[in-house]
Image 1 (cartoon, rainbow, N blue to C red):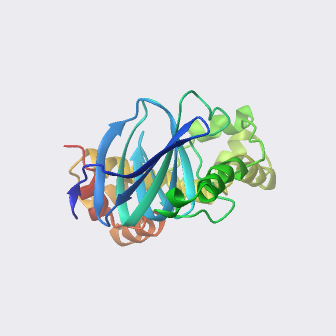
Image 2: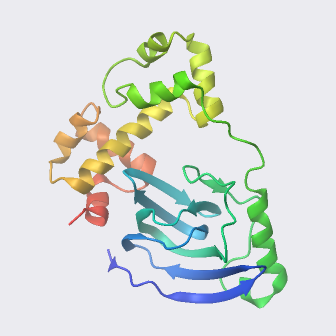
Length: 245
């Protein structure tokens, strides 16, 4: 690992009331926990990154974008050499975005220097931001919000118990998860276990086998496989990248 990265700006450009900054990050580099003073959209043009913030670990690949709110703290680890384009508005412009989701770029945007060689390339990328997700995402019903907040997702308790406690038929329960959260209950549990493990890895020195059992995995091997599959890096590598000193 190359250690903590000192952020360098490859290119910068102003247009349409925005400032766009493109940065390059080497594979294995990381940006320590930090907070931004202004909200912005970060578009991963190429490469791969794992983000850890507010106790949640997320992995993104090329052509994904996320909203970052002012004051929100997060850290980044680049699993591949990456280019990132950040759109910083002169005033709030991303109220319709949801920071809990990853958005896909609708068209293949230009990368790197091409963004600064022609106005067409820049506006193609900027225009694609408005095509990321045209559907509305209503808030989940009260019973679902309660289940999400109170069910012991990292335990071995059968998911069916959550449906029974909410007095919701199993098929409707599964449908609600897919409609409002875009994942199945089983996928939600898998993500919750990895997030719980990520927090323990970052905040404690507990042995990996203890982290595995505490977060609902059958054993360390199961834990390592599930964690690596979701985030693209092993638990040990994640701890080295994100441990809170």
